[in-house]
Length: 481
Ligand SMILES: C[S@@+](CC[C@H](N)C(=O)[O-])C[C@H]1O[C@@H](n2cnc3c(N)ncnc32)[C@H](O)[C@@H]1O
Ligand code: SF4
Image 1 (cartoon, helix red, strand yellow):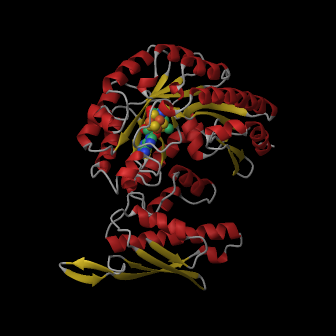
Image 2: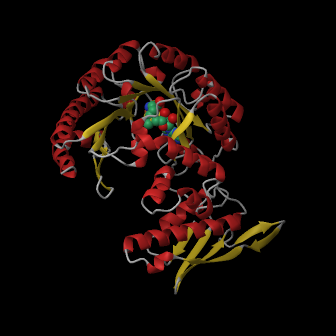
Image 3: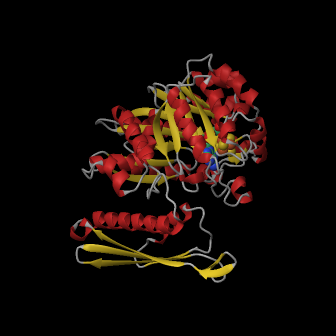
């Protein structure tokens, strides 16, 4: 892929749009020229695809040059915009939209999410409405060329979330990360160490550091006058720790909050002793099947069966937890009927939350290394069925996010019966500050007065996190001053 543009620092954004058209080959060449003509902006794209030097393709046995030119005139308010930041944002938006339109014409296809590539469509919808004073629905549908079904979806999520947005005070969420797993699932690119090849003394040292980290966070919450809304312990797999290790972490976690989630995750890491410990501080857990098809579970390297999941789920129902179950649509060799069977099996259990992820083939996962552009052809159908079956069973979508390299350019959606996970909403909508404990924890200071966000990230590597914790604790505190 080769992309050139005369607009500063735009190659990356244009590359993302080109990559989202998965039918294009790596020999695609795009040249973009941006001109200002008085009140108008002009975007010109020359697109070529093929082999043999990148400009020819085979059509019915003949080699033919495919090189097309697209030109768009936009009457754009940015020409009169005095705030340079706003001006650049509007110009970039227009360039991305016209790039998308050119590729739609070139490929004779379109995306359900139109020209939107960002990971937080609901946040965009909200900001168009609340910050730019425009109609979010029209912006999605008419300007960004988002399909009616996805625009309606975003509108309904925004309506559901609205009562949960913080109103005043200093809203904050706390994240606690456990970067270990019992083994690696082939599709996963989260940063997490495989415990089969990790020294237990490193895990013990991690727990020591995490305890200090949480204590420090607790003090900061009080000293800086934050209103703690939720706590989320994720990973990795927190329950991959031994019961004594988990107990040491949870002992630091007595918080007065309405929502405290522990991502218990893999059924093969959960037992009664750990659930007893978790139930003392948390009121929401995830128990994740990903799929209920045993053959697929084996293929994706999950060391558990569907029956293991059912047994652990049943054990978890003996406590007062709100339970979430994660499923992934588009897993290797699965059909829409396989996915529907998994969905049906989960719905029958009636958990409070179900999260439907779309398979993302990200760098760092074993599946990505072994697969080229492996997109499950039935992925769109799987998501359609999830919306209709879950809708008919009393579940409403309450949060949504998109990722790069997501099969079919679709989305991940969290559904709830009556209680959305407020942590998930806060993280996606970025309306709150976040103190993150543990390696690769990314703390965020959200300034309520101007809605700006500043960030501080701990090292990804567990050893470096432990070694640098002392100095990083004070660097993290500086973020909140
Ligand atoms: C951070 S993971 C932790 C969950 C827990 N360790 C487990 O495996 O059950 C959260 C969720 O992300 C989803 N996920 C991870 N990798 C993914 C991928 N490549 N594509 C789509 N979903 C993915 C899975 O559904 C997983 O349950
Ligand atoms: S999906 Fe969960 S258990 Fe599997 S490797 Fe990723 S974080 Fe670990």
